[in-house]
Length: 173
Image (tube, rainbow, N blue to C red):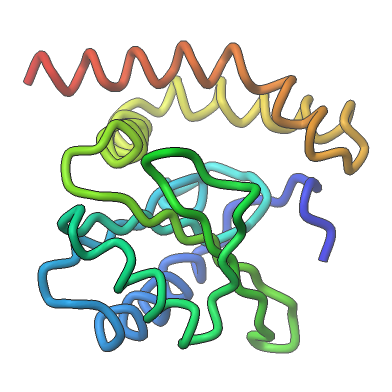
């Protein structure tokens, strides 16, 4: 699976998310908040085609949830998260195509959870910003030529600005 290749938005992203949501709901405690985020959560926004899901739980349950996700074959990546967010991925085949899921495990009201949901909600209500972000992603994928570090670097300033707008917009509500 070419991870840093731009792909058009597909309507089946929502179905793929719903399938993962059902699996996660069976695995995780009822208190877990499970949200579809990232490009595949915004209708019409192209990107890498990876289903991103952020999960918020009580801070005291993080270690337990980590174990539950690993038991369910989600691969914990020690090098990909941060202090407030654990990162997991899982590859699988759906309709003959390789698919990837990224899970971001954090706690309620963490900066990561607030920002990811705010960006998703902002993009869902701002089509002009969707077009702008898609162009940034297309250009980054073209220039990066498969390099994840370069792809992230090329998007960094735009994403920082977008996140600030989204969080500020959320605070204004």
